Length: 108
Image 1: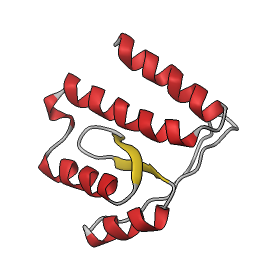
Image 2: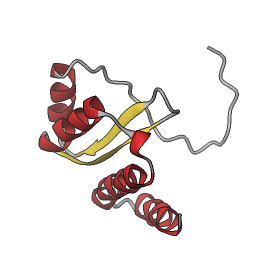
Image 3: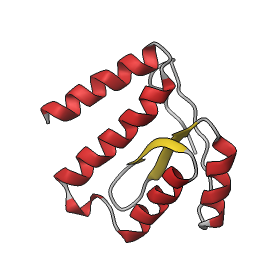
């Protein structure tokens, strides 16, 4: 877990100074670390979609969310290329943004 904490600290630093290329690369390092820790963290479909993202310009990515569900999150400078590839693979995009206001109660 020491490596996970180290990657998290480096990720925070990269985001804090606006180094998004580094952020993207660190996403992949986090994902590889998670895959090494747990064989159930992925499956052949997820691995294929991840490979498609990287092959289509993503600088990095990882699976985020709860077990049994979640999202593939990629960082890419050419977002359109990754979006088109994921759409062709049958996935739909869920956009997000960083929130700097803290925790909020959201009603759906």
